Length: 128
Image (cartoon, rainbow, N blue to C red; front, side, top):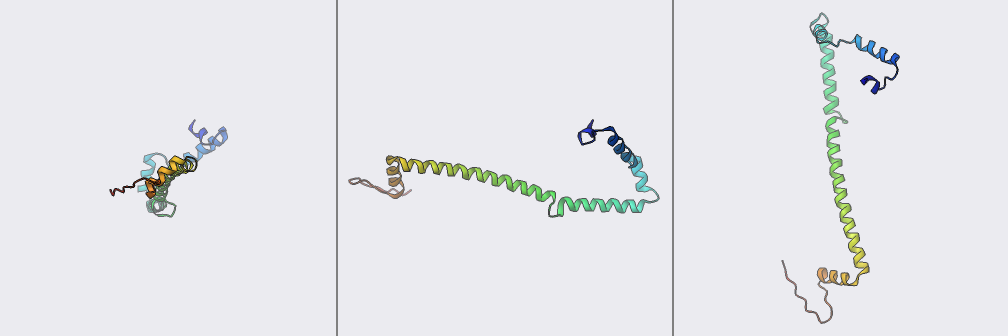
């Protein structure tokens, strides 16, 4: 049963919940009777007030659905940025490790980035 899945495990609570539901107008005919009946003004005011409150809560309040969606989008973007930066950090750590341990790699790095040359080498700088 669906109601058991939402927390109504014993039958006593289930029957109480069913009795409460039976008090509310569930059928469309009952709703039309309320809307057009002799007490239609309070029903209409209550309905409009409820709709306005829900609209405010969903769209205009500080913790609205719109803000939640924007926060979720921003969170996904920041997670992607963290992944990109983490990969860049791993790459730089690997390069630091290679430069610290391998003399040939350090020499190549110095020549490429700083224009260093070994004694007797000719250096040609080509601008791109």
